Length: 159
Image (cartoon, rainbow, N blue to C red; front, side, top):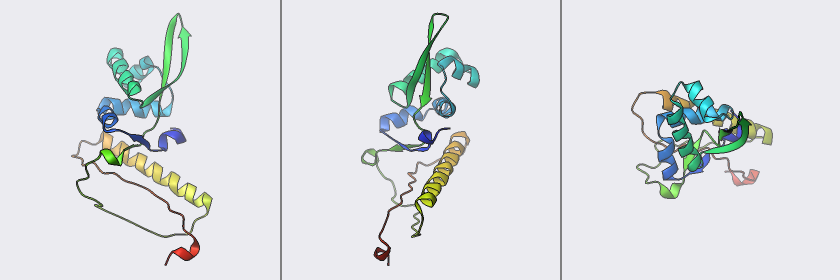
């Protein structure tokens, strides 16, 4: 998994619908680890190559995957795809919020740039962990937007 795939990608509701299919989630996770062809993905996930190709094309068409490079092997053009992200954020203007702030936490702390970067990385990993759990669990789920935001203040501004 690259640092880029840990950065949340802003998506539309249409893109959210596209990535909501369980098999497409598996494809996104696999293609976040390394670029692969449709055939390689099908083999790795033990799925039908035609079905896999269709789902990869849908993800590519809706800009969830990107074409990294192509290779010609025995006269066949092989296309290698990569997931642009594994964390997704639907544009706020498209959402109808059911309840604002089910849980909210604020904290004021002094950090160096390196500590802030480390904190951000840890939170991204935590988001990734819970995203993976939500994709593999059979429990009923409710959609939430979870955010991490660090605002910089001058020392005298915080009272």
